Image (tube, rainbow, N blue to C red):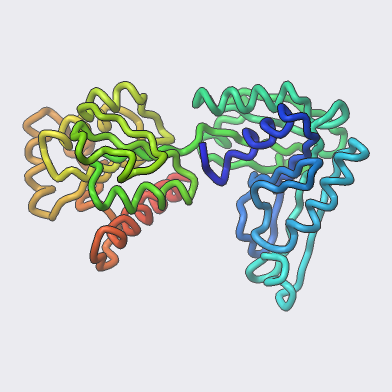
Length: 324
């Protein structure tokens, strides 16, 4: 796993290495802030930092407070407010305020066992939450059914009482790319940079190689079988790039039978029209077929594999955020 949102995993790794850790979580923002509520940063007793809570100099101040929290074992609420004139210096684009809950992982803070449960659930792609009363310090791991709307919207935040913060840990985002083509070579690292776990599927051994996709997960199998083995869910995007009905169509069938949040298929308007007709003959309704974004990607006048990959990632992001 190598994403910007795997902070619980990194924190637990430090603990297993014998280090002490504090976790900082954005619980509220006003004005403009580049990081969402729920964004996390971990600080170790060796002053190592992973993650971000503002994208700017607030991290330095939070890290200093985190070392104090590790030392005294006391959680605390931090608040930073800046004027428009000073905003850039602390990573707030247009000024505003940010509140951060800082919790050491210790007997008087977050329990190691709770962090282990969160990490285990995330690794198993099972949603889990963490609730903390920022006044009393009461904490517990919670199930999604307690706050279903928060989990559906992927939205951490304070409850109406202004004291209880709910951190939502949905399964990490995934992107299954069918077709180990040039566009995929650009798309996969872009997707990883913005927080997806990419998986490349292609039965053609000459295309799906580690030399073309270094360090990535490759599945050399027929797409329908590969997608069934992967297990599709609502935190998964499927992007079809082979431009070959023999490979794309079975993958589309599998994707349409699931609740993936995005399905995109490469091809011209004419190619997509033929695809739609094949799917109708295959028994799919116009409503189901309408879930497919084709031609794939936002129309930004893309030229070349990298720009096409950019347009695809932009569309995937737009669909994800619109649903939230």
